[in-house]
Every structure is written in C-alpha cells, then in structure tokens.
Length: 479
Ligand code: SF4
Image (cartoon, rainbow, N blue to C red; front, side, top):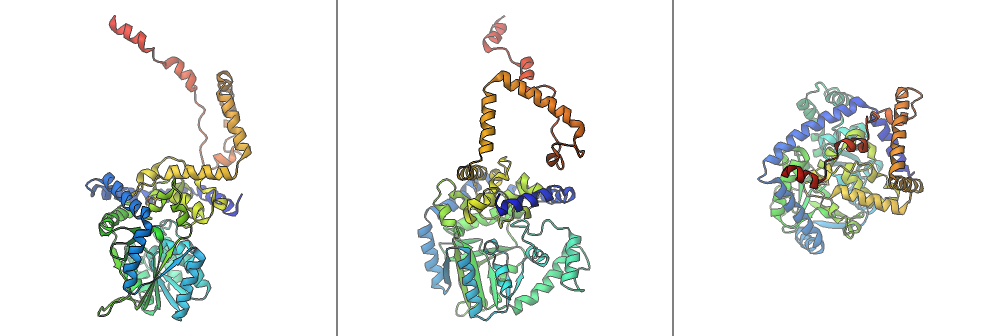
C-alpha cells in the first residue's frame, strides 16, 4: 500500500467513527442543498445552461492553442509578464524569484486552489516570508495549521464556538468575544485589513481567463480578492491552463453557474476582472502584474480523449458536497488539494496513478456527482476509468480469483442457491456476537450496521410472484 493510501485509510477510519462530527457536516450540507435548489430555479432552464457551459469549456479546450495565443497577445500588450510553469516546482520557483526581486516581507493571498496545489503558502512561509490568507475560511484554517476541508468552504467543518476560541487565542484579546458570525467576520477583517497595507505582494488565483479580451476574473465573497490584487505594488496570479474561456458571453454564463453550484448564490459577492497592471492615467492597481500559467499534468490530461472533459471543472465544489463518501470521511482524509469525486478523478493524473490509485475506489459510483456538475463532467465514469487503469497497472490476484470463483458459482444455479442459504445461516449464527469483542466483522460493524439476513431469497420470492406467461393471460382475457 502506498504512503498516501495508508494515510487515507487511517484518516478515513478515524473520521467515520466520529458520529457527532459527521452529523454536524450533514447539517451544514442540508443548508447548502436548500440554497442550491433556489439558485437553480433562478435559471430559465438549468439543464440547458449546463449544456451550454460544457460546450463553452469544451470549445476552449478543443482550440486551446488558438485561444491561449489570443489571450496572451492581449494581456501581454498591457504589460502583464506571463510565465509558463510545466510543474509545481517551477511555478513555486518563479513566485519565489519575484518575491526576492522585490525584497518582499509580507504577502497577502486571496483564495487559490492552484496555489494550494503547488504548496505555495508553505513554501513561502518556510523561506521566512509572512503569508496572510485573506479569505475568511482560508484564514481560519491557516491559523489552525490545517489544509482546506473543502475547495469552496475551507472551514465548513468548524463550529462557531471553535472559531471564536481560535480567534481569541491567535488574534489577541480584542478578538473572539462573540461567536456570532458577524462578530467573527469583523475580528478577522480587523486583523487582515492591516496586512493589506503592509503587504509588498498580493497573490491570487484565477477563476476564469477570457481569450477575447485578455483578462482574468477572480470571484470572492468578501472583497478580499480585490484588495489583495490592487493594494500591494505587485500582483502575482497563479492560473491552471484550463481556466480559459473563449469570450465574455461564456463568462456571463459561467459566473452565475459557479455561484449557484458552489454556494447557491446568484453571483459571488465580488467579481474582479483584471487585464494587466495599472495603466497610465489609472488611479488603482499594482505596478507589476505577473501571471503564472500552470500545466502540472494538465496537458497530459488534455491528450487523454477519454477523460479530457475533467478539465472543464470550474471548481464549484458541488460534486464534493453531494458525494456520500465525502459526507462520511470528511475533506481532510483524502490528503489531496482536490477532494471528493473531482479530486479522485484528477489527482491520479496530476500527482501520479502509482501513489494515488486508491482514490477512485473511494466512491459508491452512485452518479450524484455527475448529476450535480454544472459543466456535465462524466465524473463517475471517469472514476471507473481510473479504477480500470489502476487495476491494469497493479493486478490484484486475490480479487481476480474471488471474482472468478463468483463467476463460476453464479453459473451453477443449484450451488449458487446452496451458497446463499449457507450465507444466511452464517449471518444468523453470528448475529448474537455483533458489537461484542468476539464479533468477527468488528471492522465493519464498528461504524455500520450489518444487513439483516433476508427472510427469503429473490429466487424463493420469484417462485410465488412469477407472472403468468403472456399467451396464457391473453387466453384468459378472451374467455
Ligand atoms: S467537477 Fe463539476 S461539480 Fe465538481 S467541482 Fe468541478 S465543476 Fe464543480
């Protein structure tokens, strides 16, 4: 078992046993679902919008060379310095170079999952720079020394009281006096606002990049993206190369879809569109704007005809909310930047199938992820594709043997029926031991109920319910 697989198993087993935590998570998710339904109703036809959104992302990827060239010509013309990073290490190196060139001390950062993907904050902090996350959820998990629990709602696993205690301990005596959301937000705001003015560099992610106009778009709910990208003298944006969309019409479609699928909002609170550094005559904006475009396995995924639509992802996080596995093991168990179904699809591509081949199996294949995805990514089939690829690379002889044995048994009705009866007897015999120290299925029953043995098998039931053949029924009717 690979190291990430062992860590996943340990973390998931521990989380599954925390019933109260899981109940709290389910409660938070119920709020999201109600808002999401209302959000979808605002669209004339949500399903049509999904089709159009998928087509827009598909168009950008099918002609990526052309759209990328258009985008670069326009954004570079306004003085943006663009750098292509083939992997996470190269992207980190480039950010560090820029930070050193400007002799920066303090860096403010708005939420960026691409930044998380390349371990940007950790790298800069390790080198001694002060990095302040300015998104409220990110700020909370940074104070706790944790990774985000969910890509859109990084601190959704925490109760208000836990956040109050955290603020009182980490920000100072002026913070954490009340656990009301407004008071907690103001505590964080007061602490972070000072940092915008001290910061030499602001780092952001990119939600969309528009080829037609050569602009990037950053969506936030707290205005922190706008402050991080315009107050410091230098702005660095880190963008996955799949963020490109052809034109502003596509952006106008995708913005409300992102907000609806992500949080049930009509639009995020702030939509910031940036076309370059401050231009002559403009009052606001940074003196320098650096755009780092990250590949990190994306072009390989683009070349994969079967799964390339995984690059349509707009990181709304909806598939994660809907996933029954996420609901039971939480976001941290995955040990990846992108958790849930989309993470289990793309992580083996971005970080290697060898170490991350366990992730596609963390799915019930119920298809709820595919159904909810606003850009119609065929997530559950991609999970199957990844399972197939993992099995081909690492055949499991025992599993194969077990399936062969099952196939052999299923082809012999009398034996199959006998095996079913024996299984039922065994279940009945062991049921008094369930939950005790002698329970042979303790690993399973510790956090799940064992199914009751059915009173009759399907074959027995069928004998008494089998409909009459059609010809006999017709005869009866004629009589
Ligand atoms: S795969 Fe779809 S649902 Fe999941 S985060 Fe991406 S866009 Fe959202």
